[in-house]
Image (cartoon, rainbow over all chains, first blue to last red; front, top):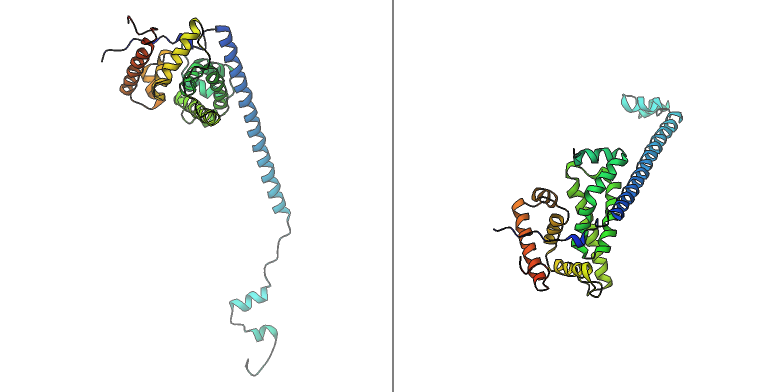
Length: 96
Length: 179
């Protein structure tokens, strides 16, 4: 395959005016850098906000009053041979 | 010595202003070429390439492989250009890529309009390849890497694109006769 000679596309070249091209490059680079910094700042603030909210949630959980365990008698009754009548102090014929 | 792209991307991620400048300097013309291949209008392509570049650099953290920055950037430019083209076609269904937007004028402007019209007759992939290669000086290896094609495929596309362009321009006696 014989290579086709290059097509002269210089009239489409946006860098034909070097000064304007340099200005364009500087403009794009500075806009991009500003956007990048804005994004970084937002991410940093988001991370700080997340840390603070996690710390607050932990503090609230830590300072909350502890709940007592369920009534021990009731647990005894449920896990041993004690009957309901024993727990209530009833002496019935049926219980005996 | 030319700094590798991956290093520039890494530095830019850390907020290095000179890395941003070098990335733009090396890739803005390629971004323009891809936008022009899709949109067919230099002014629209210029605006879109700049905006897409800014967005891409703001989201540099999303570029998973810094060594493949070129392909990643051109994909962003292409997607945004296709979106802009779809919007343009919604506004004007008769709109065609590469259609001259002004009446014929003298010198470079006539040549530019004819080139744009001839480019508009090519498939999009051939427009991208011929613009990146002949306008921005990309090698076949670079084209293959950025466009996810084989080098042989790139050569074939470039060959076909140049031949079609030459034939199209020959009718207008611009490049075709005598070459």
